[in-house]
Length: 317
Image 1 (cartoon, rainbow, N blue to C red):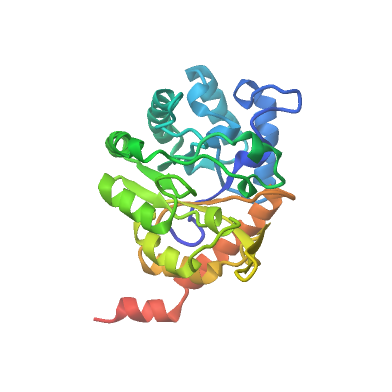
Image 2 (cartoon, rainbow, N blue to C red):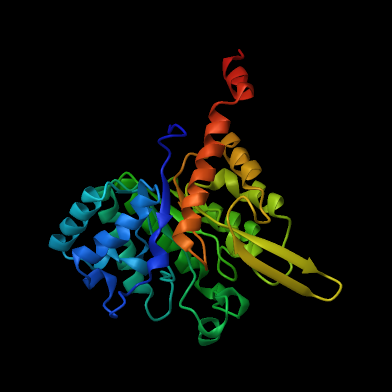
């Protein structure tokens, strides 16, 4: 079990984008470029990162380049606690088999870096309308085909078997209009997979930002937290006026948005949550906000572990 000081709280590297300023894919970039990005994370106080395949798809690196990346990580004093797949669904009609192979490759790579989680989901590439929107979640995106659900369950079980054999876990990211598109759907899909190495990523920030009716966030968390093994964590303001059908949302640091994360994180710990955190944020200085969020999470963890109520409960017969 981690202490508040040792708990892995990573920064998601998504903010740096998948290409350098010269248009070179990050996986083909120089070690100097990798080092510059990682140095910024370290200077903000991070000990861990999630490289995410939206920044650096590790599965595309040759063995020699993987060793180079390991060396850069070591030189910058950083570790990897999780590896996230982004918009690479294993049931994508065109790329599903290739994405499945990539997921298997990441499951093999993860232990080499000390990562305990590979995160995946069923979200797919942004639509042209989403690419044009101020915030991509304001436009209609991909919807999963119910006919593909049996294949989705089969492939996630397959990945779960591989993860378990490698001593790590697979986490499923909750995302609108996919097989994990609501709290109830996520719990039902997880139950159907029914694998000890597969858990949920309760990324409810993906839901509360949507301009559509939404259940109470505490009710949603209560359903999914017992199954959580990893956490993409972010927050948004949310305002809604059902009388006129008006909604608004804006990315915010954890302690300022709609979700009371002090309460929710403490509840997760009460339910036995022990997985890594990965801080995310969209817009503004994303990695700067993530750094503030990391400090906030660390303080909440400390508050929990130092609680006299928790000590008294542990000492009671």
